[in-house]
Figure 1 (spheres, rainbow, N blue to C red):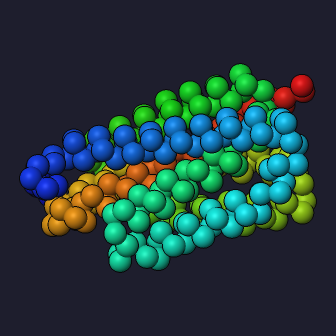
Figure 2 (figure 1 turned 90 degrees about the vertical axis):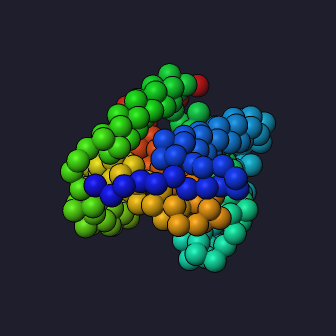
Length: 232
């Protein structure tokens, strides 16, 4: 196994465990921002039912634009720009999730959050400790993501509940594997950060962004499977 040396941020040396702590703290920050904005959006929608419909297209375009900008400009952007992209993306996801309490009851949302957190922590631990090189399955993960996307688009026209449930269950299994894989990739990110302290500060955001997306996608699938309709 490749030896992991400490890297410096300013005058301080950052160990691998400290690196992971910074990443998970950043993931948690993103989730808190999304949750806070979601709650605020929910209150706005209650007072103005057309609020979200007026901004939904803008939010969708913003999410896609931020994701594309982040991936394309990553090598050249500063750590402050990387942080800004991450915060803005967390904000836009909060707007999207603000409508969930109108669709699902509170108990279902709470259950989905807890179940997602438990599964996310479990697969992160497995990815961190396993000796198996999960990158060998990367092509399977990528093909699975593409297939789910294609089938989801097709099912938008078909409207099959059975296909929808299949997509959700397959999505849960797929993202559990991706979480472990992404967690294992944190070692590669740490090794890259080891070469440059400035790059290291930016890579923390990169790792957090990947794990944040994993958490969100797993949560959506679990809520779709177990969520009960809000009849109020």
